[in-house]
Amino acid sequence: MTTNPCGKHALIIEDEMLIALEVESLLHDFGFESCDIVDNPADAVKSALAHRPDLVTADMRILGGTGVEAVAKITERLGWVPHIYVTGNPDMLAGKTAAPVVDKPLSRRALAEACQRACAA
Image 1 (tube, rainbow, N blue to C red):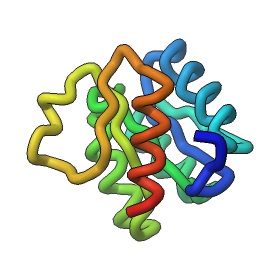
Image 2 (tube, rainbow, N blue to C red; image 1 turned 30 degrees about the vertical axis):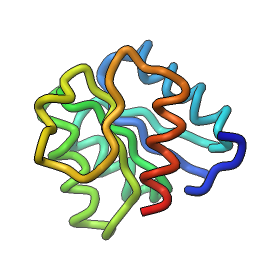
Image 3 (cartoon, one colour; image 1 turned 120 degrees about the vertical axis):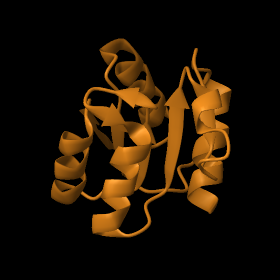
Image 4 (tube, rainbow, N blue to C red; image 1 turned 90 degrees about the vertical axis):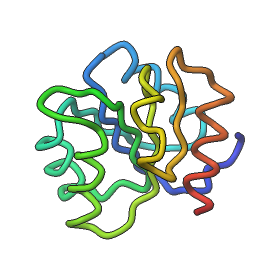
C-alpha cells in the first residue's frame, strides 16, 4: 500500500504496547501522519472526540471492555468512521462485524489490505 486512501490520522485501540507500536509504524509507512494509542473504550472515545480519526484499528480484548464496544461508542458520537479489528481472537468477531479483521500475529500485507478495504467502504 503506497498511498493512504483514508486520511492522515489513525486511532489505535490496543492494550499491548509492542503491538500498538508495530501497528503505528506500519500505518506511518502507509501514509498516516499521526496516530493516537489508547488501551480502553473510555479513552478511545475521548481521543476520537479530541481528534477525529480517519481510521480506527481496534483489538477485540482491551482493558475495561472490547474493541467492538469502543468502536460502537465512537460511531455513536461521530458517525461512521472506517475501522478494522486487529486481534488474536478473530473467531470472537465471526458474524458480529462487516469490518475487516486482521489476525495476530500481524502481517504488513494483511494490515495494508484491511486498511484499503475499510477505507473503500
